[in-house]
Length: 464
Image (cartoon, rainbow, N blue to C red; front, top):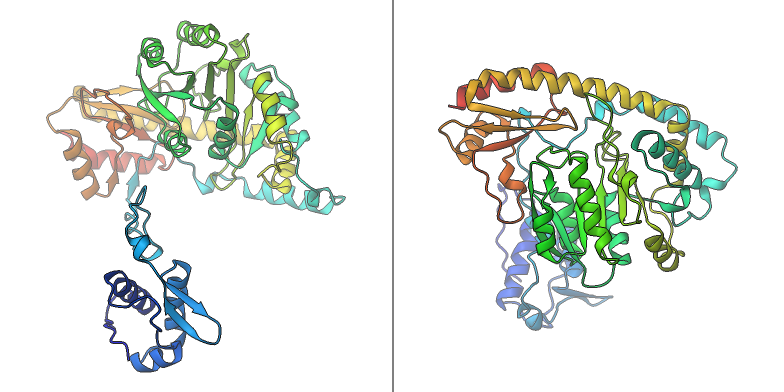
């Protein structure tokens, strides 16, 4: 009988131990190709463990190709010699080797977040019942590739009133999150496209584009946003920007820089700008900044918007506005696709906007975030002259630049020991970008005013 070493007192479940042991024995060559393993009944009896434990381990090994299940014959070792010589493109942890989740912090200054308590669940539940009760069967029909026309019409009206964008439903594409829309969008650009991204960058978008196999070049940001000088030197044909509130620096791109960016795109017919307007609803002083697309006269801007930031990350509902050339390519390439947003969610969202609930929800959130933004600035002033606060009264975060003696790594470590999670600016850089002083992206969405005050009180004892 097979000799197996298991640790009954280990925190690691028995089926994981058995799975890992057998996999290692196979990889070491101690179990040879074609060798038959004991039946699950026999091995469970031999080891004094349940048969389901053995079955679970065996099924995982079958799924990963280490053993083969033969009906009425049993389990046999697979041929893996050739597989063991393959150098993987990237290490993907197995199901049992996933890293442990970082423990929750007492105070988390996450720069991009939303709270479940902010979700309008009562309204959403009521609208959901209305959509289901009065549905004539349309919720169960095939989904249009672009998504619900009624919702796209509402979005077009919203963009005109709030972002100065003149468009129609035909140019709007709905999808389950911005990452999915980016996957569609980059199928529409010519092969071999080079994407210029702001540096520091919105890392979620950066990782998505990188995963799609696109070449990326960093274009450093200055006081006006993406540097046009960097952009022109890069030979990029696509520029990915967040002009209304650059993430993570918070810079609002001025009109002169926007004009230069549009001129760059207009210079060559193969160039496009992707405008990610991820949190334009949250501006706490003055009127919202008009979208870059509202200035575009040459059809060079792709506009990305999302409902996830205002509602919940669980509501995977984003949209993009395509220029004519890319819209024609979309209609040709994806005409047989189905929208990835459920028809029920789109129907609810249409009612949510149409009844004024969305506007009321945004106003409530804007007021709440403004109070937290102001509370954070007030608390940070305790640091005195060593702290430089950079805020544009927009979005869900601001920058704290520290002129004291401690470096960024030491401050992050000391804060973590106090149960406070900080986000250094350098963690968002994608190329050579000099962060002169320790700088932190301070989000204020996950913390209320009392938590902000308590967290900063602790940080005052650390920063010196």
